[in-house]
Image (tube, rainbow, N blue to C red):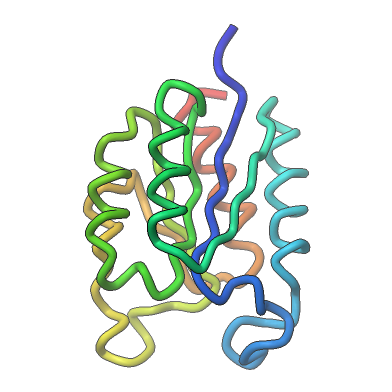
Length: 147
């Protein structure tokens, strides 16, 4: 039986969604976004496992534990997107599809946000579509997995 677990990772400050800069990130909470991922995943025979952490090492450990256990990863690294080479390296060691997702469009924001260290090891990136990005990311994973 093919692995059905989709790991959804949320980086620093995403626990504050719905409260922090709603003009940039919207008014939906992280729980709302995870629910969108869960509903979309279920449509494709996938089950979501979610972890949010403000600590880079915890995210790295989660990626390591996904190896051989999860079919794919959807990751919103938050600010770690721009400098967390340990997350880059951990994702590079994961064998399944990796889809990077961002609520806002980092390329349209401050110059320091324009570089993603995650993008080079991701199958693809979805940015700027708000909460709909989570639906699109899970659909991309399903397509990459041939579901």
